[in-house]
Every structure is written in structure tokens, then in C-alpha cells.
Length: 117
Image (cartoon, rainbow, N blue to C red; front, side, top):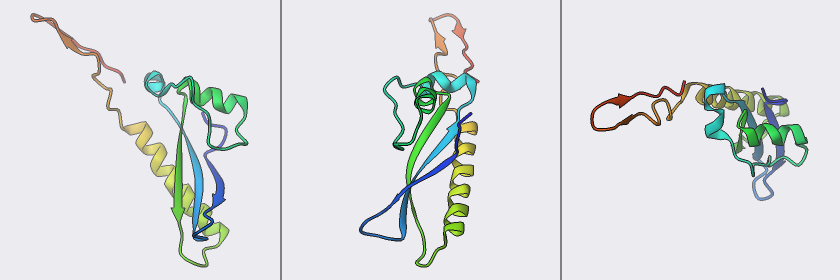
């Protein structure tokens, strides 16, 4: 499980209504091997060694995103927008499984079925 869910990084220099943020989502155990990347490192400079280890072993996945807001948006409104973005992101990581049957094979006679959760 990620230590944090949303981290605001910075504001775009050329567009004060756009903010960069990082979203961290929990990866279902059966799919962590698919998300594992030994070279992964968070875009957030404040990430701890444990945060980066979680990204590397695939237990957490990171999305670097830009959130455009209307002029005059308050911090509370930006936070609410980012919470919604995180909820949608976590939901997609949890429910979308393109590897469900990856590895299922046929040897010419028999199918060997693989279910990757």
C-alpha cells in the first residue's frame, strides 16, 4: 500500500492554472510482477527509499500527471480534483487486468490455461 496517494509537485511556469502531481496506487498482488521495474524511481524528490522500493517491486505504481484548473481555483478545490483523479486511477489499476490470461498456451493438442488474477 502506498504511503501517500497524491503529491503536488509544482505549478507550470507558463500556465499558472496547471499543476504537476504524482499519484501512487496500490497494485493487486497477482499483478505486481507485471508492474515491477528495478530501475523505477519516483518523480517526487521527497520519495523515501521504501517508496522507491515499492515502485521497483511493483507493489505501488506511479502516475505523473498535469491537472489544469480554472483561474481562481483554491487549494481546497485543487485537492478535491486531485483526490478524484486518484480515485479514478486506483480504480483503473485495481480493475484493469490486460494480463489475465497471459501465458495461456496450446501445444497442438491441449490448452494450458493460466489465470493471472
